[in-house]
Length: 239
Image 1 (cartoon, one colour):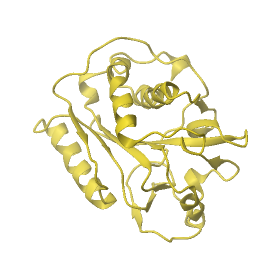
Image 2 (spheres, rainbow, N blue to C red; image 1 turned 180 degrees about the vertical axis):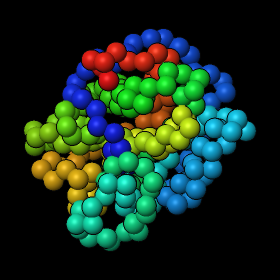
Image 3 (tube, rainbow, N blue to C red; image 1 turned 60 degrees about the horizontal axis):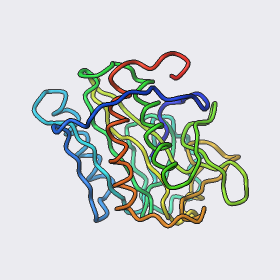
């Protein structure tokens, strides 16, 4: 998923405590969902939430191989279009989605929470970071380089997750992606998120065998904390 919003370096998340409302639909897709299909459904659901005719949605899924282009994608960063390329309509540049990468589409109404775009992105990053920690993987934000970062098998900093969002009428769409066990060579067809000097890694490459179901359960266990962080704006030093 592309990284549509930059976030500062390692900062403490906004802390709070809240249970997940029953009104949020939690959807877990076991089969791969074509990217265009998911984008169309997400776009329609975003509009319906804004109109008050549908409830909020958190959708966990995987896509067949695809390159997606954000609004800042540069043509020269598409190195080898071996897969379908889709205009995503989100911020950010090119990214790759495919089997072994877990996607989370987060469609929430910020009108019922703090209307804080940076706070939302910060909380989303924190949700992924907290979940990775549960599998023994330390990860972090990095100043000037969007996404979720960790140490690769070679000891160098590498990207393990991406954040990309769009907000319409204070309703969010898109969300995050995390590399569980994708074919990392598929990232070589693009300059991921416009960052050339750093590589990508995955839980599998770091020696962690995590299934999509295990990842989903771990993420959902952290959901109340994520939602609680959206209740009030993050202080400036955490945004």
